[in-house]
Every structure is written in C-alpha cells, then in structure tokens.
Image (cartoon, rainbow, N blue to C red; front, top):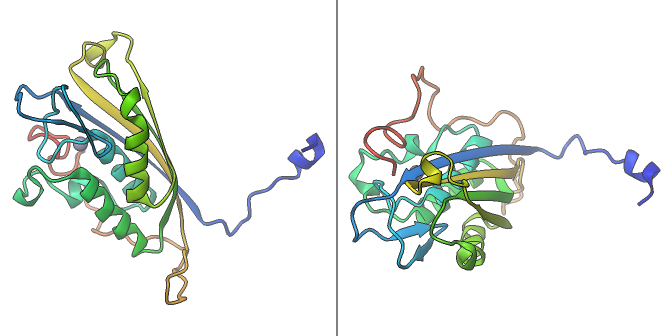
Length: 209
Ligand SMILES: [Zn+2]
C-alpha cells in the first residue's frame, strides 16, 4: 500500500461498531480446595481465587467488556453474588449467557483482546487453551496475553490476579429470519439507577462472583 492509498482509508459510516472494556481483580483464596480457573481453564497446582462463582476473573473481565459495549450495566447487576444460583457457577457459562444477551439485541462480538496480570502461576502454557475457550464462548477471535506486575503493589506481592479486556461488537447484525436489528441506541436491560458505585456485590465486600 502506498502512502497516498493509506491516506484515503476511511471507516464506513454504517459500520455500527461498539467498543467495551472490562476489568476484574480477585484475591487468592486461603481455601486449598479451591481450584484456579482462568479463561475457562482449570490450572492445576495453583491456589484458587476468592469469589462467589468459580472466580474466573478473565471471564468476568470479558463479560463486563461485552456488557459495556452493549450499555448493559455490569456483571454484578445480572449475576449478583447474593444469589445462590451463581454460587460456584462456571463463569464461562455466565459469559455465554452474556453473549446470548447481546445477540438478542443484534450485537455480535467481533473480537476481544485480554491481559491477565499476576506474578504466579506461569500462564504461558495455558494461554492458547484460554483463548480457544473464550473464542468459542464469543464466537469470535480472542487474544489472551499474560504479564507480571514486576513486584509492584498487591499484584506484585502475588496476592491476587487482575484481568483487563477490550471487545469490539458489531451492531445491527442480521437475524436468521432476515430481520435487521436497529443500530440505534441499545436499550439497557435494566433501567439506569442512581448508583454510588459498584453493582450488588460483584466486586464489593461480599466478594466477587
Ligand atoms: Zn469477578
């Protein structure tokens, strides 16, 4: 591509793309029986994370990014940790539910990019499987990266795991019936309420799902 051709590139006005970002952090659990689950992968020999569900912080970050792209509040709003149904729940399953929630609104994931921050365990051997499982849940390519906090702060002291995710979502997708969903404002699943901060308990004192 020549410089002139690159200068001519434009984004089609009807692209109907939305971006969303998600962040989640869970501390390691003192319960030796809790498995570590990240990106839908159980990592043997590593301490598990505290949480109401399986505490899969990577799935939670991706799900929050999707909900953000759809202006659908956050994970704690839809799956509160005060609800016994989500106790020990598979977060990969919760993620699939969120994807279905978006698809019903004509919003289809295009791709996602995620970073997991932790000192240990070493995640590199598990990254391809995490990306594959997340990709299956989204029906779109997912990139997973792992990095360390270089000894800084709580993450650097190995007290927990943090995950960030960015997703791109296409709006106005065509349904199998041929009906085209409107590309206008996305209706929130729940009416916006005045809020002092976090949704019910997801990241609150009661522990994250
Ligand atoms: Zn979480």
